Structures are given as C-alpha cells and as structure tokens.
Amino acid sequence: MAHIVIMGAGLGGMPMAYEIREQARAEDKVTVINDSENFQFTPSNPWVAVGWRKRDDIAFPIKSYLERKNINFIPVAAKRVHPEENRVELADGQSVAYDFLVVATGPKLAFDEVAGLGPHGGHTQSICHVDHAVKASAVWDEFVKDPGQIVVGAVQGASCYGPAYEFAMIMDTDLRRRKIRDRVPMTFVTAEPYIGHLGLGGVGDSKGMMESTMRSRHIKWICNAKVSKVEAGKMFVTEHDETGAPKKEHELAFKYSMMLPAFKGIDAVFGIEGLTNPRGFILIDPYQRNPKFKNIYSVGVCVAIPPVEATPVPTGTPKTGYMIESMVTATAHNIRAVLDGNEPDQKATWNAVCLADFGDSGAAFAALPQIPPRNVNWFKEGKWVHLAKIAFEKYFIRKMKKGTSEPLYEKYVLNVLGIKKLKDKA
Image (cartoon, rainbow, N blue to C red):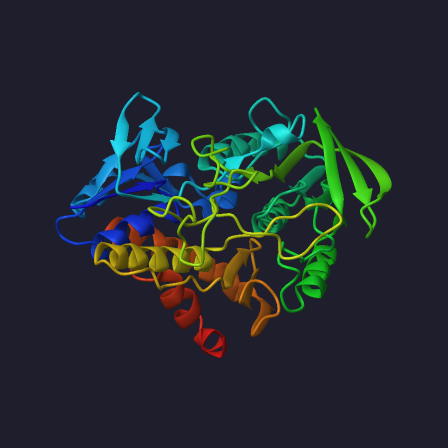
C-alpha cells in the first residue's frame, strides 16, 4: 500500500485528488491537506467583488465529497514539508507521512513586496481569494455611493494578468448599469510591456483587440509600470522605457483600487534546497516530478516556470486552467506508473486556453503551446465568452461536487465551444 498525499484543494488539488484516486490501486491511500474546509472557484472572484455572486455561490465544504470517493481530508494548513523524512508537518502539530507527495497549494500572495499593497493593512483590494473578494465587495458597495477615481491592474512580478483585465471590465460594466460610469475615471496599471501581453508575449492580436476594448470603455493605461508604494488614496508608479530605464513618475489618486500582487511559493516549502527555486516555486522535470526528491510532484500555480520572455519590468508566466488540468492528468498517470514499477512517461501539454469575462462580453484565447513559437495563436472577443464563462462556472463546481476526474477543459472549453480543432492542429 502507498500513501499519496496532496497539499491543496483548489483548481489543481481537487481534480488531482479525484484523478489519482481513480488511477491508484484499490489498496492505496489518498489524503488531501488544505488550509481551509472549503473549495473555492477562484475564477468567479471578480463577480463576488462587485456583488454579482455571493461566497456560497462559488465556495462549499469539501469533506463529504472527498470522503465519498474514499479520499481522506485534513483541513489544517501545512507548516513545513520535510522531504528527507517523507512527511508533512501541520500547523496543529500533526505529522502526515507520505510515499508520494503532490504539491498543489497555489501561491503565497506577496503583498508585502510593495509597501501599502493589499487588503491586510494595505490600501488596495484583491480578488485572489474569496475572502478578499468578499471584503472588496463591501468596499465596492460604499464606493458606488460616492464614486471617484479607480486604479486597477497588476504590480511588477505578477504572473496572472487575465483577472486584472476582467475586473477592470466588470467594474466598468457594473458602473454603466448603475449609470455612474461618467463619474469614475479609470486607469489600468500593469508591469506588462504592452496591453494584451498577458505574460505570454501576446496571443494572436491580443494587443490590438485589448487596446481597442480599453479605449472603447474609456480606460487609460500605464505599461512597463513598477509600483513603488501605496498610500491611502494614492499610488506611486514609475513608468519605464523599453530598456528598463525609468521614464516617468506617476502619483495616481484613487478612491478604489484593486492590484494583483506578485506570487511566491508558500512558507511550507520556501527555501528547501533542491525542491524550490529562489521564489519558492516547486522545481519539476518534464514529468511533473521534482528532480531531487523523486517522490514529490507538483501541479498548478506553485510550479516553477520561467518567464516567456525578458521584459523591461519583471512579468511572470501564467498557469491557466487547461495547463493545470494537463499537469494533473500527467501526474496521476506517472504516479501509477511508478507504483507499477515503471518510469514516468506522461508530459503535460503546456497549452494555454482561457476565457476572460468582461461583464457583458469577453475574450477567449488559445496559445498552443503556451511558450512561443506556437502552432496555434488564437484570440477572439464576443458576448458568447461571457455566457460561456457563466456556464463553465456551473459545470466545474458541479463536477467538483460529483467527484469526477474527467478533463473539464478538454471536454468543455475545446469541445463545447467548438475549438477542438485548435488542439488537433497543435
């Protein structure tokens, strides 16, 4: 019998638990460790932040769903991984021994890297966690009573730009519905070298299409931006040129701000030599396995991936849902191969497929593979994306409650939306 432990129960951890339960042998034990009793559908957080969703719409307790599939659940945060001892130390003093460990925790949100950033004692809101989104919603409710300037975007080192664009457009839509958009100047601040870069070097005509969308919604922007600090109602931003040299200093007044932070690895793994890179992300080989500790695998945002290209202000590479799904499938098959005495042979596809909601329309892109040069470079806009994302939210949550390991992005995003041919080309 082998004990397979999964750290994290989010968009990577929950599918990982279900898939490894199906792939593992009947006698093998599967345990999920998570710092919360709940699953949250993170992509819906922008809707929560403007009151279009409530917490209970996108989050639910997971213990009963996991146990129904013969998966043990420990709702206690991991304090430290001890890879030489094959055990995870928990915050309450427990230790969990493992034969295989899958790290699927997502990132630590590095608000502390910019003074005054974030909802914990800072001056900006966040949509990275449902708790943050609920707080942002309460602040939004007060803001719309007496609106003013908005600053929104992503700071230097951020690696997930889609939600920043989504939230800017969703706020714009909500303000127009309230008939107060004319009272709210909005500025988008981003470390990207140009609008629509997305940490991917652009996808298709994402630059032209996103710039057009921003202009049509009267959203100004500052690119190659480094946020030095945030004070109450004021953000200090240095704009850089294409060489990385400071170009212009901005002091941006705001009455409401949401800025995505940079990501780091969680404290439980940070600084473990051979396991993580300097930012604390898990080092993996082509089979999702750590090169030094070969019984440790990793999937999702906590995986170390180099930037797609050098940019004047540091930008990271996003890990989209489709990529995470392929990591999960490869990991499950590779662990089963090792259990059977074979070597891992399955690799993730490293493709990026994403639906970005704009409140009343949206944008969809496919970068196959994610890192250029690509076989497919596709970007489209339309109201159908908004409707598709709503449907996908319902579909994903239902599947997490049902306990299936079927490839959701493969089935839904590629097949149902009629773009499976893109994958076939890749």
